[in-house]
Length: 150
Image 1: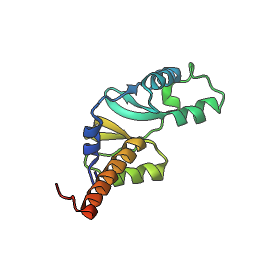
Image 2: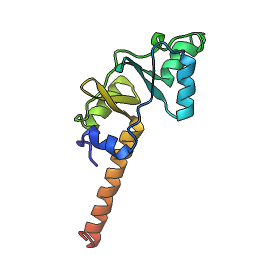
Image 3: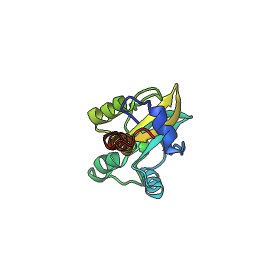
């Protein structure tokens, strides 16, 4: 598990390929409720099976709450982030982390052509790197103590 691994590997390790989404015409309240029920911090916004935006808790806090709008009266299209920055399954963990850091994102959709194949979070990528480092440490300890390889 390295920085040079493709995002495709991270998606496979997550197990679930479920993509949670809302439509642009739904009220923001529906999206916030879904985020709470699913314990996620962002949802993709899909129209006619195409990715048109992404909605995060940060969007909600900054564009609804702080502006005094009602989440039940505000459509998602009014606060979603669009156009969406995304990666492909072939992009690396390092490239994805760089995109997320530069744009201050915590969630990044993964598209193959026009089809959404998953979403990676900064937590997914950090977990990937930490797991790889733990494996390397274990191998180095074995090498130092003379028990590697087995």
